[in-house]
Length: 237
Ligand code: ZN
Image (cartoon, rainbow, N blue to C red; front, side):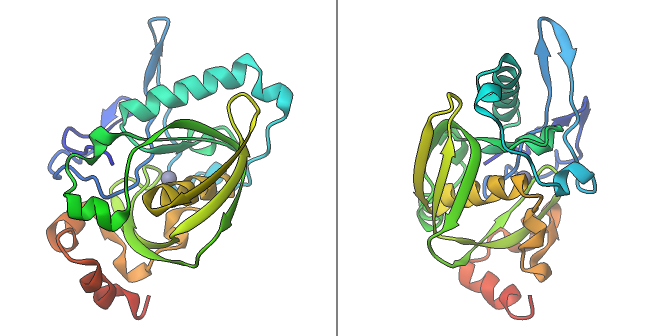
């Protein structure tokens, strides 16, 4: 979902990912890097170990949702997500312990995936949208296994079993109720981002023996079939 080919910018430095092939199998959240009114505004993404990533985000009030501060936050998060690029970003990752996340999975992120890979993942584009105070219900058991990543844990990846289908009830950026039934990759993104709002990271859910550096993922695991990965990691995880 993201290009590592040029490296990722975070707090003005380039992460040492330039040697990796473009990787589109992974969920990776955005780093913050944006300019406002010509002023450089760089906010470092919260990295694993930061307490804010392990806390419970608090709900937003209707008054807050319509406030300029939250509108600005959403806009900055959107710019950041597009810049990274990534498919989802949760407010705690940018230092705000709020139940707010944004999602956008653009078709252009899919060009490096084969049709077969897209089909296997049930992945198609998802327009930009905002989730506030979401409640998620897993409609099927968490047993669809693919590699995920997260920029709060840069340079690593692991296989996360996720529910194929979820039901999410939330409010949008206008405070209007939304009800989302999602399957496939979109359901995975929703689970990943909403996990962030409860202080859960993907490493809490991985098959632990699949945990891998991105370099070793490229070298050893990227080309394996799902059946091969299951044989390699599922038992003893
Ligand atoms: Zn994440």
